[in-house]
Amino acid sequence: MSAPTSDAILERMMALHPKIIDLTLDRVWRLLDTLGNPQNDLPPVIHLAGTNGKGSTQAMIRAGLEAAGKRVHAYTSPHLARFHERIRLAGDLISEEHLTAVLDECYAANGGESITYFEITTVAGLLAFARRAADFTLLEVGLGGRLDATNVISPAISVITPVSIDHEQFLGDTLAKIAAEKAGIIKCGVPVVVGPQPDEAMEVIETTAARLGVPLIAYGQHWHVTEEAGRLVYQDERGLLDLPLRALIGAHQVQNAGAALAVLRHLGASEMGCEAALANAVWPARMQRLRTGPLVAAAGAAELWLDGGHNAAAGLALAEVLARLPNRPTHLICGMLNTKDVTGYLRPLAAEALSLTAVSIPGEAATLSAAETETAARSVGLTSHVAESVAAALQAILTRDPECRVLICGSLYLAGHILRENG
Image (cartoon, rainbow, N blue to C red; front, side):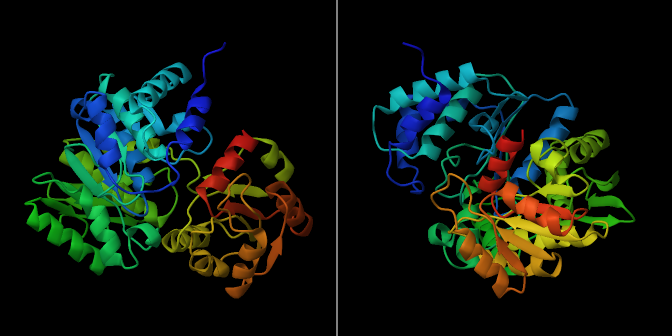
């Protein structure tokens, strides 16, 4: 009989707990203890939480460290096309053979006990990291922070990117409650880099840091970042950096770049490393221009873009990006999950798009129906349509406007489907 694949083991793991999200650390601690507590053997950890910008900030930190010759582990979620994207060992995506082995080991060690998919796969990532030499480990929180499965480590530095309203059913219905969950990654005495925050969130973070005796490295107090004359200008107590604009597009990425630079400067990075952080970072489905594949071929003279942002703050950031792009008629193809604030996401986009074609996300039980998304789009003033698929939506748009800009947006799950199908 052939050996199981990583996909087969991941499918088994989905059956170990009835809830997709069930925030507690008890199950994680139990499994880690069974495996010999690999979280205690990691290379120095940089732990990132926040509502928006975690992945982009992590990508820039990694690019800066690797430019300095450092070997960097990285953990992120969710994946887009393949689970392997979540675990990067010393710079390389984990191999199928290695992933299968470490998942199988964790599954066996768990002994059939209740544990969520994210919890057991996070433990698998930590186990893989502990067994491979590296200089740093970058860990991105999955949801919240205080009770997230990644919050079992002793970090060298923590990072909190901008906090906004999202996942209210798990984290709370106010910015203060959500910020308290994010601030749960702050550890006694460990420095924390803090990106731009609403006052309500910043107050919670500052109170938590003061209680734990944590040195803050906060935007607007200890570092500043702006875009000036097509350059990125960063300043802290070590001096000023005047750098080429980053590879990742959007004013919100200036803020993310600032947080990444604050981390790198704290770690002693050179100006060359800081420049590489901006120039070399790659983060798919964050205002990504698609240039190859069957959808691009079908688009002809039209531009095709992809973005996975999915909350109100992401909608604002995306609208700002669209406003700054060269003038061209823009049409949206949008699919969202039913747990998201669809009107909050779409409202700022209404001023930048001529139309929206709604689709359901293939294979996602929690997808918002295309009809529901279309209704929400109409409610914020968008000319809206419904299509059975992204391909059908694209064809209909091109029939009306063959040289336009088309942005596929609304969900990382939709973005992942596009990257798999268009690969």
